[in-house]
Image (cartoon, rainbow, N blue to C red; front, side, top):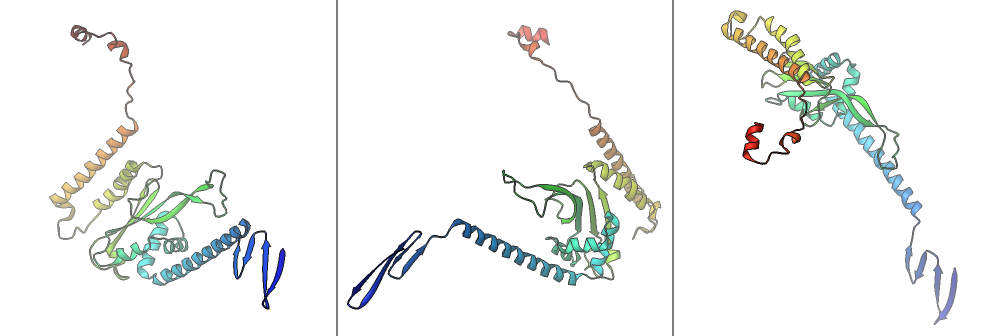
Length: 273
């Protein structure tokens, strides 16, 4: 640092010159090293993560307080259907971004269906480091999540809830107004999963049904018999379609160039034909 003092009319002025800073009168410009900027951004990032985690915990507890008999019914069905504990299912659904869809399902004239996928999903390791190319190590892990059914590929198990009326779903009527089922597509074969679901679960349940509502004759009614016949026929067609796809005929590719290469005149084409 170099300082020079000049006395003018009793006032003392100082001029200072230093690497990285300049003092002129009362103004000061400072150049910070890159390491301090990086350190500050890391601190801010850490604080941001802590704030997000804090907010997520508050949201989870607020959702946990909403869980009543209706939610308990869904949780117990899901736990039975996909072989998880009720505690695990509860933690999963209160952490899901689509949690509000459940309340919409319960509302009067609400959503007609509520879907859950349980399948392998790519998830980033919590302590994963960036690779030189900017990518990270991801793992395939089983995950249960609420879905609209149209935004994610289906390649695992689908657990679904269906409403039977437009009435509001309450703790007293949830078991009567809501139907539950599981559709297994573990190997990615949706046709096979649908065929199994209909032939092994739905059709036997329908044929053993005693109460058909306004139809007093039950299974003896001609319309009921036609309906069951149509379902049987649909499953049969589904099975045939699946088998045709799995055992599809592979036609050998033929090089036709050797046959058409020397065709020049209409008579050549006629002869070739």
